Figure 1: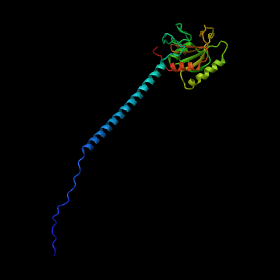
Figure 2 (figure 1 turned 120 degrees about the vertical axis):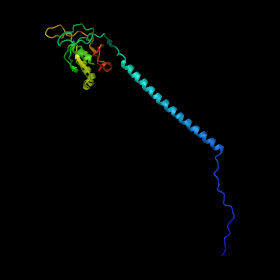
Figure 3 (figure 1 turned 90 degrees about the vertical axis):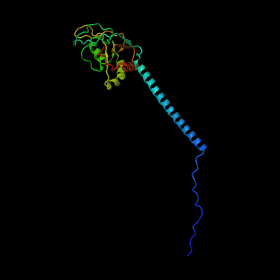
Length: 224
């Protein structure tokens, strides 16, 4: 039998992995630095955009708040005459400092909100002002159905929403059982009142009326 002669050839050498070159290492570090720089730049841009948006919101809030505090053109401001409650049917113990009044002694109960075509005692309506109401008076010695219709059109949305607004007549000739007149001449065909505020108008100015109501309606004044 033929015997196989063992081979004396050396086994093939295993190829060792090549080490990364210095150039490849430098490129990888540069890429990492560039990526990190891009990330920081994007983060800074996002922060700047967020800061700008917040600043715009703050400025817008300040502008809206400032506008809300501005007086309505033509309005008058009177000193407070207090919040004294008096007996129903009695006359204010002090002379009101404006006509119609904007503060002072008043009855404990309110006049009804909404369109009230009959005259109402000032002592009732002052309580409405104290509760954050706005009272719109019209005075027409010879009647003014067109003016009343215009006012009703402007105020109807407030009535529909149940807002604290009253539309009523001011009648300097109004008496009860031969009493002294319960209203006084207010010196203008239309006057809007809120607590310590009075705004005379010669004609129905819808924009001004809305501005006055939106500025003062709903502000409670039980502390004076």
